[in-house]
Length: 95
Image (cartoon, rainbow, N blue to C red):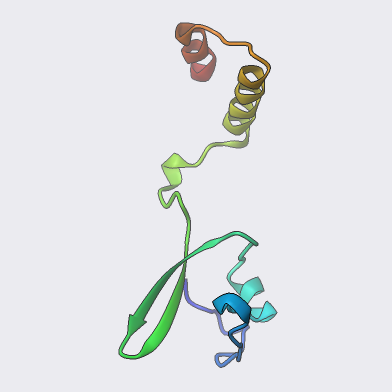
């Protein structure tokens, strides 16, 4: 993901305690990052490269809000000790 021209190309940051790197707010906002996001870290010709990574990179693997609600509801039912036969779950998912 490249930084768009709305961000300064040469932001400065520092390494803090426990090797933590602070990402400047402007870069954070331009890349639409969130706390807890993952990065691929590589070294190329002596330069450090941080590339935002999503755990699921394929759009087809992302749940719709409706599917996510069904998963949350099912997880809550399992936590409460309730379960359903697979054929009923499969039928509900197909709807």
